[in-house]
Amino acid sequence: MYIKIISLALLPFLAACVETTTPPAQKKAPPKPTAAKPAVVRSSQSALSAFSRVTRRMEPVAERSCREVHRNAPTKFCDFVIKIDKNPKTPPNAMQSIGKDGRPVITFNINLMRTLRNDHEFAFIFGHEAGHQIGQHLSRVRGNVTAGAILGGILAGALGASVDSGAELGSQIGFFSYAKEHELQADRIGTHITYRGGYDPIIGARSFAGRGGSNAFLSTHPPSQDRVNTVHRTAAQIRASRAKGVTPPITWK
Image 1 (tube, rainbow, N blue to C red):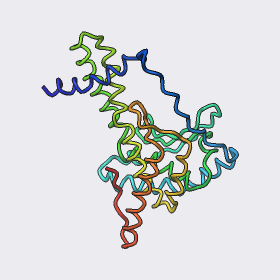
Image 2: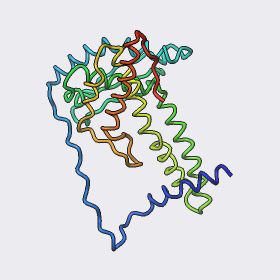
Image 3: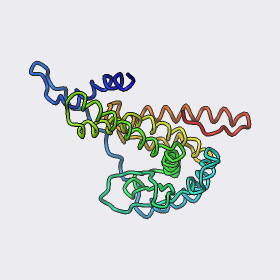
Image 4: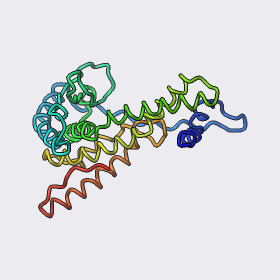
């Protein structure tokens, strides 16, 4: 019964993915304007210097914050590896991944670094990527994708469609269903870590400008304004606690 109910709930998503034509009587909406790409504001050497300066200060803070939350985790769970992708052809990006040794990896690429205007922006993005590890988002995504693939395959089989296609669609739904919430959670955690590192997350969050995001279902990032609002709310809560002489615990849900 539980599977049947969830399967019916997924039908609108299946229909939306299959239906690609526009009814003759319906005019296509004009395309939405795309966000401007963040401008390059510094040289590669300046970006590398800022990155080195900020990560020296932020890495131990992120690791301490991680161990505070995950007291019983293996040592390597919070032992960050910091990398730079110097390929000039890759679009601006930063990411968190897991290395072959099981340690979390934070990677900035040079094209993103050249768009960051100050140390606060470097620090906030670093804290955000560390936040993905602290929030265990990669492992949660894997679980969502697996569950979605299984459910999608069951639903497709019940409807007489290809099980493989259903599993693929289900895995995509499993991935996108929590992607935006994970980004907002990482923003909350990143706000805590940025403050603890001595930087201003409000200034750091200005790095969202021009980077898009959408309320659309198949979007991995929420609208930039939602992210800015999340940072402002979290920062206000932190400041209120600090005014009482208390360092608040890292929370994100």
